[in-house]
Image (tube, rainbow, N blue to C red):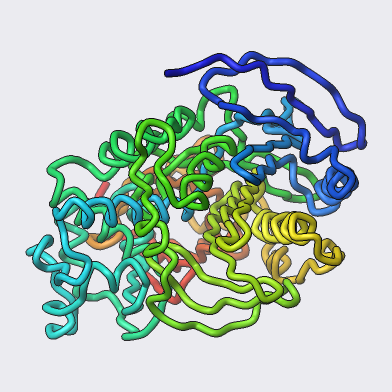
Length: 498
């Protein structure tokens, strides 16, 4: 049964002022901001408000589940250009946090007896073929859930997560080229394989399975595997800090680039409901299938990975469970997953022994990942009554990325031929197609759903999308191909086909 709730929304401005607005929101549940006015927490919103402008982040939504109660605080703007404020129900792309939902779906299917976590993946995906023939026969569903074999293939990730040009035939043709570490290696490929396992077992898409068997039973009405939600006026617009100003990120997610390793839109209240089920280790809403043993299994260590946190003192990674990263924070078990993509960052975590959880959602490309981590540990320290620490002064330089080493110059001055000559379609069997268009003297490049703005450091050489170095291959006055270097050590030639 759905109810209407009057939810007080507080928007913290970049100047530190506050505005009150009342909004009727459906299917949110008992959500309030009262936690952030308690003595132990009341100074945090002003701190966060100050940090947002300092690290060039338009806004964020912070959520806490404590004692079964949900608390949400929106801060800043979901659309910086139009000064549209964040709300408690602003939808965000949550990127790799999707993996935990995919893992839950797999464990639900195992609970129903539809699959076996310790069965070979090839039992469900007969087309599976790796370069290691023995591993092809033995790699299990559990191995994929815990990233235990380190399968990686950049062109597959490019096609699934960025361009949308991945087909099933191309996927299985490229898969034998995947690198294999044989040990832990976090990778999208493990989870896009799991998405295919879900589809093989259920006869429906992984998206449809999650919608029907996770989101609906848990009353997550603001959660979806449809990218079009991000185009709505209520969604957080992805932003990046470029040339001294915030701007909306050009690249956008599409249904073709929503995959089982990163293909969900959600809201803070929905994620808190979902966390509450895991923390409470019992079914919630209308019989949501998060039973005690399932939640415990998901956070059970499958592989040990001792490693200190790069910028949070007294925190370390201990291992990986079935979907969750396992950490310790100041001696406490800490279950967490982050998501990060151009223009968005997401953090979802909980402390099992203390029955508290935190959600932080940010619309920023630059420092969003760092900010979500810092906000989360600040909240945990206050929730546990620990001595507060000033984590906001720990911004590591690598969070901002290296300074640009190329300068945008006039296109025509760096082309050996007339600009119109470069327009056309270029193709690579493994990586898809590139379309080059010309408007006046300006060249634009699109690779499937990925728009690649061009910068020209030299004749017929370009940098596309900020990190794809490339060049046009010109012989005897004829443009034959594009050589495109990828962010990872990988180079591909796209032959001109039109």
